[in-house]
Image (cartoon, rainbow, N blue to C red; front, side, top):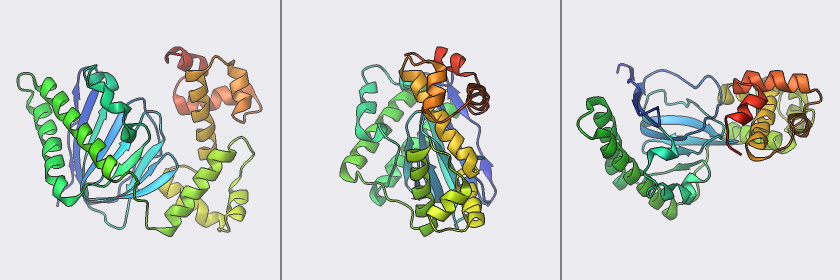
Length: 280
């Protein structure tokens, strides 16, 4: 079966983006990342390992991973190489104001994996295929129709979550161990954490931990610690009026120059510019 990497279709100023893709080879996001929009990762066939906000899921046919804004996530291959998925990014503003209330419901407050019952999968797939087709053909009022289809999908996802609120995890023991380590880092990121310390704490060989952690997250341990610190700094810049140097110290940086350099490397802009571009 040939790989298919479909065109990314956008509506407006990228307030809605959808892409259909299938692949027969191992693939992964280069590293865990976050963005300011919602993401729906809809797996039509195959199996994928999905890392989101310190949790690791094994997504199967019919599963939909919901990623809320600013949460760290990535995907990687499982033992099943072939997969087919539809990926959707959308800003809350894409929905009509009266319809945006759907995002206040639980599955859109915290990133999660939703397992779709087999009998529900054809209808979910119909909505996804129709959205891709509408964006590809761009017939009259297609943007309004896509908005309608997206709202229907979100309502269905909310109902699925109401029936099964607990997301299934990964059945791979090492995946669970990496998730534990990620949770530990998130709880202790202000401390001076090293690969050797973490390996000793969790009774794992440093070389093995480094290899598995890199495969699942795209990061070396030291990089991931810095990412968690910067992510927390971003949150504080968006939601508080604290001085930049105070935030740097609070998230574990001893020197403001190191903080500024690291922040710009991971966020793409300086801390002050980041704060200016996000409303308080």
